[in-house]
Length: 193
Image (tube, rainbow, N blue to C red; front, side):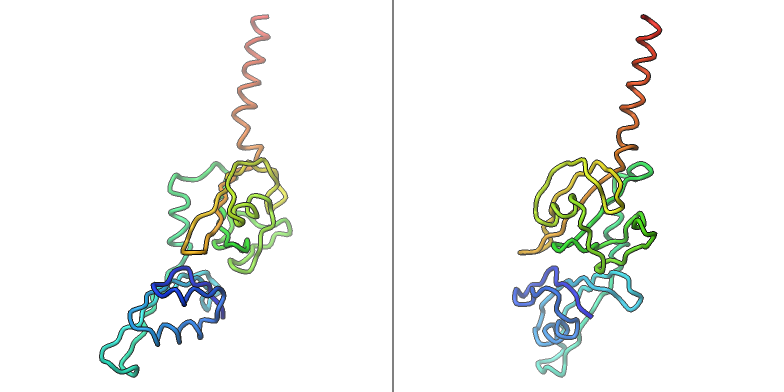
């Protein structure tokens, strides 16, 4: 099982995609280092592991590794949706630098599948550009093959590591108020004409 170190008080721990076993050995051997790793738990759910080696004596045998497992959806999703839902089709997508999904997607893929975090790589333009460190607003096609309006940008997570965030809504829903206004405007103009 592999994980990605997001933060560590010891810069030598900042190795991407190392095994959890190798990571735990590093933590055990280093007094006081605090680290955060993103990985999957036994139930295949994305989790953040916050860990620290605690020594109760001077011997390596007197150590304890404290690991706190946090469901990433429980922590990240409320922060990403703090302003509420984005209509019926809106979604916030979080990807790592390799465009792998970090939280569960709101919508299924075109084949009906629901991809698992860290296992599915989105190659839609907004996610690709956010993962590459760019930011902007675009009219594009999303991972479902649906036309969307999307805002995207990188999020610095730790030294040398960033994620990409995309906030998007189906173009049809996003532009519906504009289309309605145009229809109302035409009806009013015809009445006067």
